[in-house]
Length: 205
Image 1 (tube, rainbow, N blue to C red):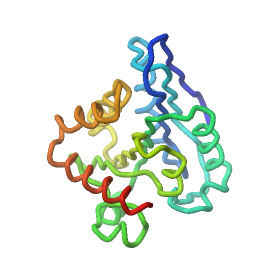
Image 2: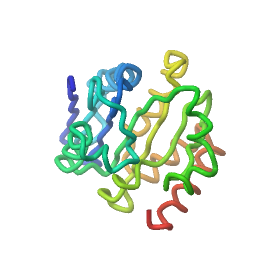
Image 3: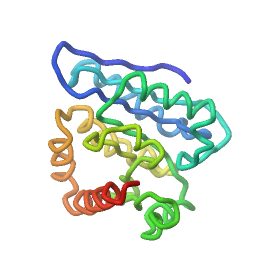
């Protein structure tokens, strides 16, 4: 699994958990970004406790995080352990996808087919969306739970953009304040995402 980074301060703030490398060899793309986030956080601690896990697994059989089977696997149980241990109110998953998966991830039919809203393309193929319904039930209704998907064929090109998003979440004091900071960067896209998130929560998923 590798290094787990903790940042802490004496100030009060939401507990935050950032995770990457949840399945397959995805961590090859996401871990370097989360490691950079952790190193930058060492000099500027934002919240009471932030936990950054660059890789849940180094290499494993690919099981989709929307599947119950994932949470029965070693890596799925490891992820749930972190959530139960730290009880974060801010939770962010960083994933990487291939070109062939783009249209499936942003398809308007995704909610009907997979029980989760489509991702919103913020810019350059960096996608923002909900976490798996199975996992969302472990959080409070007012917790901030997001997934960021990065295109695995151009991680170097989008690296700074993704780090900017992650730093906004890392520095956020409240859910609404964090969403507002994201909206200032991507107003139209965040409004679409908020609408999808709201409908998703209202549906009871």
